[in-house]
Length: 298
Length: 236
Image 1 (cartoon, chains in turn yellow, brown):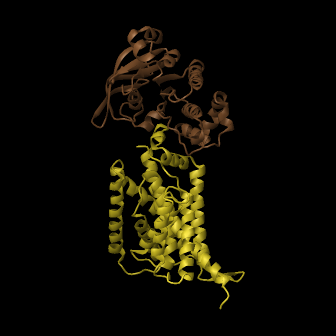
Image 2: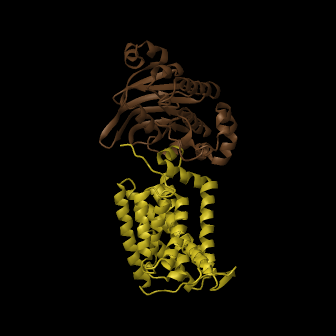
Image 3: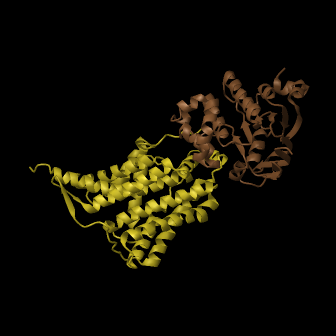
């Protein structure tokens, strides 16, 4: 019998954390919109794919990676704001199901648009990180994984600082807590919602850009990642930003470990496993790890 | 020129008309009470002023029409509205709630300038600034809602049922502070109340609303002697 390979175990964990941080970013984008607009934006993944193609185009035109990265985030932000103003705002006061259906429609439209503009073939996106590993106490960790994790971590921290320390961030939080009261404080609620969509789109773009080097860029790149992100958000509690991050990381590591060590799960069954986790959470703890149970008086 | 003037203001929620032409005025430096039974349109009148409900007719603030402006623009004119149920941000801290009160005038500068004055009226707020607003007692929440409205240095303060669900001592303390603000700083107040006796004590004048219209109006003393008001709203 072979000794348990601890080095490989830790390698699985670190690579799980890297993919988990991508899920976490996209899950956080879902939570951002959920907290203000109270719907799950099913188009979040497709918006991310679309912006990743924009980054690919920019790089193809000779821009350096990080310049294209920054430009893409700005474009994604503007796109997110635009989508909210043009499409969501007109149905803002309609039942939530109307907005949900709209985001599903948006998913299909953006997916089709992406294929129409860039074609269905797979594009290779460069990674900003060297394709090497570092040896830390016998555990080989790829620099790609470390870089992915760090980029996601930094973007989450920047976002956290924005919400925690700026007036605008506070105003956006106040809208999430009590939109009517925010209005009475002089907050222009509609623009705060649009800003939330913009930030979510930018966060999604980061997830897309980080996923692209390993997942390969095709019009359906983010579909599967969106399912993981959705599971992560539900696991953490759909209204909890901290929950989305923790949920994403747990899911990334858990799926990686299950795929490697539990016979029968393998590569093919990773996604169903994520869905099983989603189902169990919904059954056992509907509010998620960090979510609050909302009691609605009827 | 009155600070606030409503001329034939109507408002509706969907198909249901809530205000059938309310006409009233509030002079600078006054405390005016708005009395009436449930569903008479007291809350809707305040919401019409702050732009939280669709309305028609004329609303003038300091002579300028505000009847078509959005809530955020109306707040900028210097009208603070403490709504029914207080409208606190339950998940935010006490301090963050105050910051939101200062939002309209530039949060940081305003808050540091106004905080000492607020703490002089509500000393406990300084000690408990990091507490989550939702965990405060009902009385403290009402005080915080009042403090938050004052941070923005409004010219007109509108209070909706401040006494609702509070112990009598807390209600007296609340009205004492409102009266003091009015006497010391010349703050103009329009207060909606079910508790007519305490409102008439604090207010100089009052309007009684019945089915979306002003039915009776006059000086507080006058209304206290008015037989209809006494029977319907004061209970003796």
